[in-house]
Amino acid sequence: MVKVNKIKDNIYQIRVIDKENKNFHGCIFPVIDGSSYAFYLIMDEQVTLVDTIDDIYYDEVLPEIDKLLNGRKIDNVIVNHVEPDHEGSFALVMKDNPQANVYTSKAGIKAMQEQFFKEYNYNVVGYGDSLNIGKYNLLFMETPLVHWPDNMWTYLQEEKILFSNDAFGQLLVDDVVYDEELDKDKLLKYSREYYANIVMPNNKNVKALLTKFANVNWDIELICPAHGIMLKGYIKDMLAQYQSFANNTIIDNKALVVYESIWGNTKLMAQSIVDELVSKGYEVKSYQLSKSRISEIMDEMMDTKLLVLGSSNHNNCILPPVADFLERVKATHFENRNGIVFGSYGWAKIPFNDLKERLAAAKFNILTEPIIVNYTPHQEEEKTIKDEIAQVI
Ligand code: FEO
Image (cartoon, rainbow, N blue to C red; front, side, top):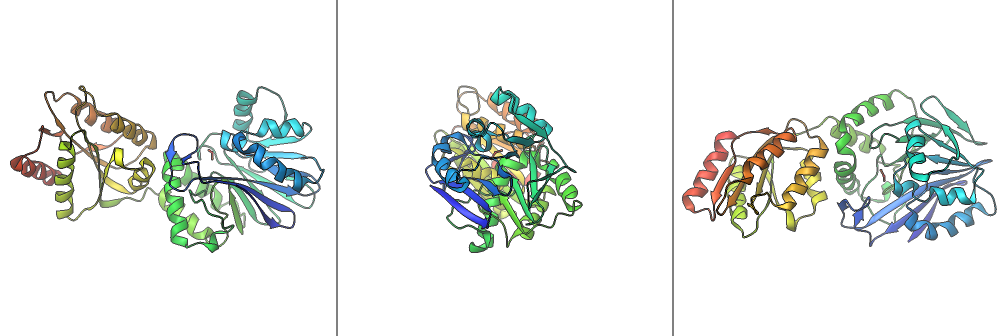
């Protein structure tokens, strides 16, 4: 469904709400409600498009763009980010508007040349540059590696609007136009899961960006992200939440017990571990990977101090869902976290050191040797598991 929202007399948001698309950002992040993608059109003396959209939606959005253009051509295309969900239809836009000037970061041009194999009227912009399009002036700021090297923001000075692309997005899929129409906690919760999966791997850069942003003196009344809902009433709350994430705020007594279990024995071990952690005052959440949504687990990982990770032995290897989870953990670059590994085996204990080493390679401080049980944990072994946990937490 395409929705055009008029922001000002001559500024429009064009947003696709795709409730069937339950894999956000390509195939990586399973989401509950579907996906949303937005870009913006400024009808000034020079018609300026701020980003485009995934080409799978281009046929849907083109009639809406044409209606707004009403016979005019696009003079400028601002490319805040070259990932295909935003610039997938760039070449199609340029086919109809070959004379248009393209404004993007230095890293953006390089990435576009590698994707579109054609020279356009590229212009490098960055902090300190501005573009007059008639009544309005656009200012730029590179936001490198939040979350790709090419990311930048565009600021419409006269209307105090920040076009932030991926930054400040949320996984919200809702017909409302502005944040104030929603419960604040709900919006921030959807922003958090988005951050955990999209931005957290580059958390250090967010801290630097927020420091820089605090000094640029851009007064902001509206944030227009490329995903989710536009921010008007909860801007301060969103910035405070980003600052908290960037500060790597961790809850010392929060633990996640994440595991996969083939025949239920590792699951029994997980339950003993949860019971012990709860009895010691931990706030604990437990997830069996095959029955859980990985994006939600990554969200919970954001402020978790202790990860207890379990796998059964599967042909002398850890189970594939555990390996997948470990790759995500490694890519997220968590800091100051503790880890314990556990699992049940049948006739060989082989994979548990591998599990421990992989978690250590993800920079977790491993608190103890793997806690392992042969086949089903009996009563005495359950007590041993609890004792081993109690000794190291
Ligand atoms: Fe929504 Fe990095 O693309």
